[in-house]
Amino acid sequence: MTFSSPRPPIAHAPRPWLNRLKGECAYPVDGEGAATRSCCNPSGAALYCFRHRSVMRGPKVSSPADFEREIMRFLEHRQ
Image 1 (tube, rainbow, N blue to C red):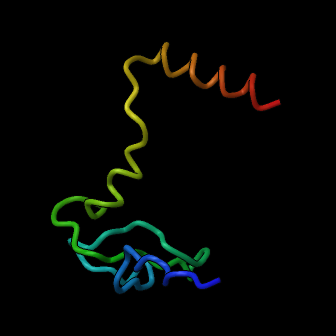
Image 2 (image 1 turned 60 degrees about the vertical axis):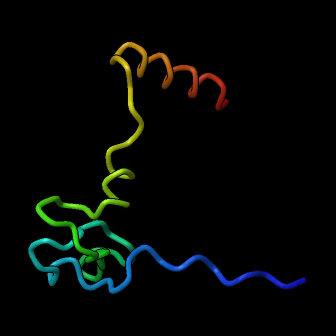
């Protein structure tokens, strides 16, 4: 059985989080603590690049009450 090559990484040239420049994505892609590396793809005036911005935004919620119901439903079915 052969597998196709893995998808190319979203972060093309990650670097240490503290070494990224203004206009580069701050999304952490690997490492821990001082060794954390960020995506560093162009992000313009935003903190994250387009692809990571959608991840950090999270799901759209119509209201806080709906969000609370969804969380409770998830927790009830998790056990």
